[in-house]
Length: 395
Image 1 (cartoon, rainbow, N blue to C red):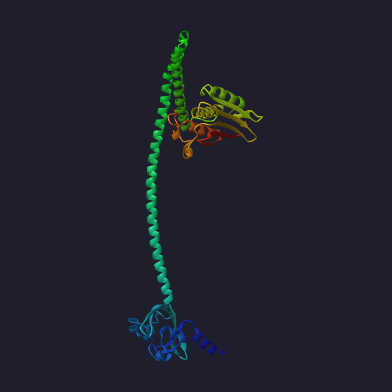
Image 2: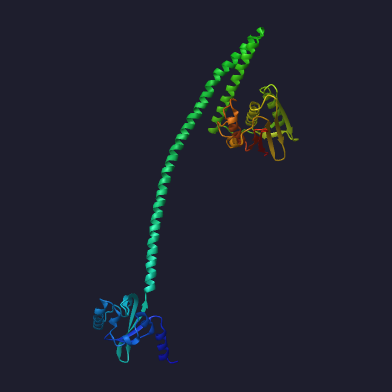
């Protein structure tokens, strides 16, 4: 294939339109792609001025552009290329990219125009612009929503901060009051206790049953009030962080026996506290005072919420991995729906009725057990009673 044939084939099969004109603007050749682009047959355009493919005002100014270029040699399109609007046979306009080359051929000047249809590109650009605008709107909306959320969070944070400060202040006042009230009540209670003991002593010669009975009531009431004040003091120390676990090594079996004997004195007449220790090992490393308070609280509750004729099991155990303290009674039990609140401060189940109590005992037990890195669990129902189990890891 010679060069001329090759070039002809390339032009005829090019995807872009190719048009040649003479120096007067008359169309000399047009390839099939250009015919399709402008919707003309070849014979309809050859011999006509190229301006027929342009809309106003370019149509009227084209010959002037060409004449001015030939005079000044200053190109606006020739050798430069730019985007223009083309016009099809039916008058429809479309965007196109036009590049024009000046060619010297057979002693004369011709101009070759290379035309690329930009219709789809412009559609895509418009879609992109619309999409970008849509994204901008979304960003603005989301930014506004985010700013509103941040503002609301800042306001909520401010409210929470104010509430927290008030809560802290109230907590300080409450703890101060509890501490002051507990200490202030101790002196008159000690006086009442001492006076009751003196009355009991000096009434011995008279062997008066009514006197002994009422003195016993006074002593019992003083002990109850003292226990309540102690609970308040324990809570105050816990909440202010004053209380820390102080570990010592002690005999757990002996510890259990001493508490059983002490609590048996407070039990109802026909109640029996049975203490047992399981395991060969008896020495344990814990805070004896905190553990004693836990045991007294649990046995005290068993005494309080059980009937007159009952057995309260108090067991201690040391195995290879843990130390276990358990207290089991067959008392009134804890209603299932209220068990989740059991370790909350001041909570008392509805079935406790008129039985006295502050609702602080189990809260203190739970917090003391946590101080010693242990766990407090229970199993209870209103038929079979309650089993409390305290478990501590052996270090």
